[in-house]
Length: 254
Image (cartoon, rainbow, N blue to C red; front, side, top):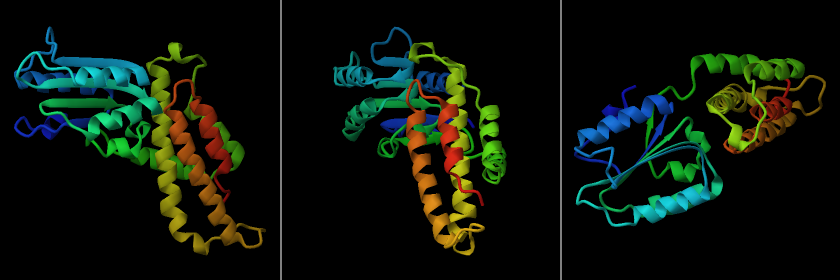
């Protein structure tokens, strides 16, 4: 998808959230900004911030710079590319985007929009550069849900190979693992909802009295765990493998 098709020079939105690979998305944004006649080098009104984890200090610094008077009468542009946004930083960003400043525009680039709070996502014009859930992930999720527990754990081990290390040692490969985990988590949630939640009244667990009620409770527990795992996956130092194994443990055996 060409993100330039979503950007209108004559009607520029205050804040864009672009979901996709940094190396593919950022060059296109630079190209668009330059097409506006704005220099992307040696220009104090243009900022490009690229990092792994966006922290509270980064958000405070951004807020401070945003309110500084521009050096020209033209637009101020901020491009921020990060793999994770810590919760405290997101709360600060919420305040920034609640009160837009004229001629100030933001482009946030993330590998997966689910690393952000829904309330923060709602402040942006969202641009997706890929399908929300791939057909391949849906097939894997369907297979995963139908597996015995031991097979699920083996499946997670094969799907996600994560190196150990602290936040400073994390690299693009580990971030990619987390993004893959988020995508697969979305597919699991979609499959559980579409195949079982809408039809659980006709299902029973073999050998369990009150099977329908048990399935309903098990699914609710499962969805709560998926919600927690989605939050933890956005935090530096989290283990995608351990978190996905916790999901494997709570999926009912249909």
